[in-house]
Length: 253
Image (cartoon, rainbow, N blue to C red; front, side):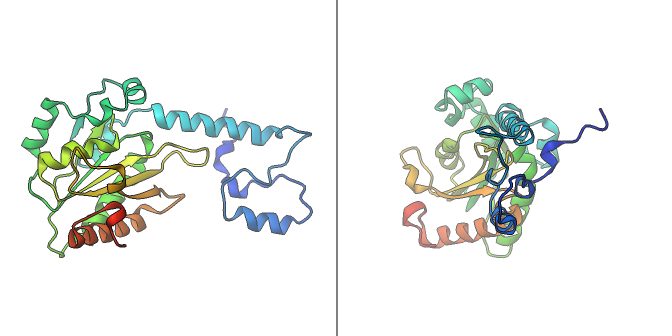
């Protein structure tokens, strides 16, 4: 078993198996994408290695959706936990409306443990990628806080929401009376990355807000926009929201 090679250890942009006449051009093209190009074929079928790689990446994507964020990860990030109206992952996937509801007992926890009347409330949720929390949240929250330090912007108490959907912001922002709400949440995984996260940021989030009121920073991961770079950009967006008192389509970036 020790000699079995992990076929996922080779980045897709380094996996070149085709007999393309212009190998140099294909190598240059693959530098810009993790799409499955230049992987060759046997007749109309995949070769064995690309096929097994596809199966492995598909399994990793399924795991990202179905896995739970463990308590050690939450503790290491210095967060406390609440949950939505969902009882488990099955509820979250089949009843997204429950994933937007914060039960009364969980609201009470927030009122007891969080600062209120802040400029910015940042929290994270598992969403559709549990691994994204451990992979990105630490760097994101640290850089956002460092970037806003000294600007006079007050930041609320961070926490973790299990079985979370984006629109929990519609309940959490009014509850804590936060001007800007930033939800760091796991993205639906693709076949090249199962640890990607998005930031949904809104000014004056409320139950009757529309989807266009969110400003979104997506593809945050070490294979996309690095968490450190994303954190600095999110902090810049937050400051603009506080200055312009708006978000989404009305925000001038």
